[in-house]
Amino acid sequence: MKLRQFQYVVEVVKNGMNVTAAADKLFTSQPGVSSQIKRLEEELGVIIFERSGKHINGLTPEGKKLAERFESVLDEVNNIKRIADDFSHPDSGVLSIATTHTQARYVLPPVVTAFRQKYPDVHLQIHQGTPEQIASLTDSGEADIGVATEALELFDNLILLPCYRWNRCLIVPQGHPLIKEPELTLEAISAHPIITYVFGVADRSVINRAFSDHELDLNVVLTAADAEVIKTYVRNGLGIGVCARMAYDKRQDSDLVALDAGNLFDSSVTSLAIRKNAVIRKYVYDFIQLFAGHLSRDVVDKAMSAHNDTSLQEQLYKDYVREAETR
Image 1 (tube, rainbow, N blue to C red):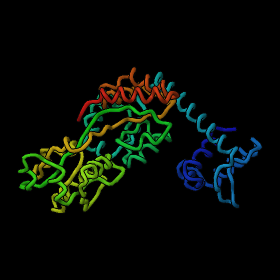
Image 2: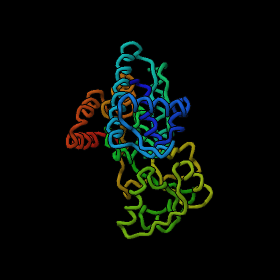
Image 3: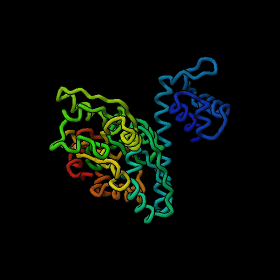
């Protein structure tokens, strides 16, 4: 048995039983992957994949158990490498972050700048995607950490660490009648066409719930995954924008006005996710604390050590939410 064979099996599973896609991901050939998997099956005396001719349909019951073990072995090999690297090259390596456009554009820049000053030899990779994609990348180990406001809790293999609370604002053009309202209300907002996030991005359900609770119609004329797109269409007169407060820059968005809507919507919590059982390198701990000051190494280790105790995980999460700052 070879680790490479384990990797082929795991990658085929991750790529939806598509051997060609797995081969492309591993920079090898499709026949080579198929051949090595066949050899592994012969050596073990077990059929790992169900097949129809040359097409793989899925894992056999035995194959499912083996694939889980293969992934566990590969994870442990990576952990051994991380431990060794922390001793031999403590200030160099790769840090892969999966996050949303909002985090990458408005929150991470000062954190990344401070991190680069401290660790100039650490190569940073930032993968932008939907919350589901972020959770998947972190769960698979392709990203060291994931940062998002939702969907992370859908993956049982992730430890969640709450970072900060945030809320929303209303973006309107200069001179808009809502600016003169003595108190911004949902009733006043509902009279205008709205531009906001697509579902699954930036906790969009919070907006819908607020209008639903007040039995008001939400006239959404356009949705986007990106606050810059929302602001662009507000500028074009298509409607008023509802987006994250952090997405408004007084200097760059001087042609627009941000009206605080924190009293109209429930606040949301952005969390950071780490894969259970992962060995965390020192510079990753430092990045986490730069991003959220209350998440010290001791706090992260305590959360990681509770990975097998669901009730303790939930209690720790609630405790850390109370400590999360507001942005």
